Amino acid sequence: MSKVVFITGASSGIGKSIGEFLVEKGFIVYGTSRNPEKYKNSKFLILELDVKKEETILESVNAIIKKEGRIDVVINNAGAGITGPIEEIPHDEIKANFDTNFFGPIKVIKAVLPQMRKQNGGLIINVTSIAGYMGLPYRGVYSASKAALEIITEAFRMEIKDFNIKMTNVAPGDFATNIAAGRYHAPLLDDSPYKKPYGDTLNLMNAHVDNGSNPDVMAKAVFKIIETPNPKVHYKVGEFMQKFSIVLKRILPDKVYEKLLMNHYKL
Image (cartoon, rainbow, N blue to C red):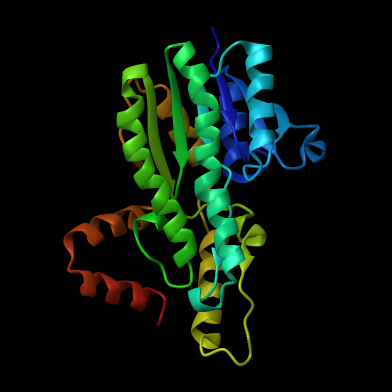
């Protein structure tokens, strides 16, 4: 029997690549978007969902259960980027980012757990970020939101183990997607004390995304996780140096690692 997969934020980028790859592998895939009417030619059905709005989550989950009778895999992929000096990012934008990157996935998890308990099994994959393993300059809010999702997954795994429900994180590095175009950018203010370092860092971040890996790499990694009987707690997917940066953070003194980051961003 084909597994039923539910992917949030699946209209483009990593989510779309995962969905299309899993369809080719014989899975029944449902994706989501805030504007599904734009994606009528998608290779899988796109449902309307905004992770900030709990009612749209429940509607999508209930629609899938009514049609398929089960949900086997949930991929919490919907997310939003945000950049800027923390001092200058409006507080409402910080809250909005956490609503999407942290509270949104929690709402999705809560919506699917009753069904997974009922069917005595399921897998939840939370897409985080390598940026969630370190506080990156001018990406501090994004790093924090993804780090929060990483940590709460560790706790969730232990709480749902008795129900035969598995959960894991997969942290991508830089991939060639449209996330840079869709992220919130705090404006470069002429009178800002951060104008030059923030502007230089922003250009560097955008170049990393433009030169990032093909999202199909993430799709293959997620497929492998789905096929693994007992997934690990954390997975990292990206260029060697991006993954190695996490190792360096574990072994280097804090100030040495901080200096490496500052040198990388030319701060």
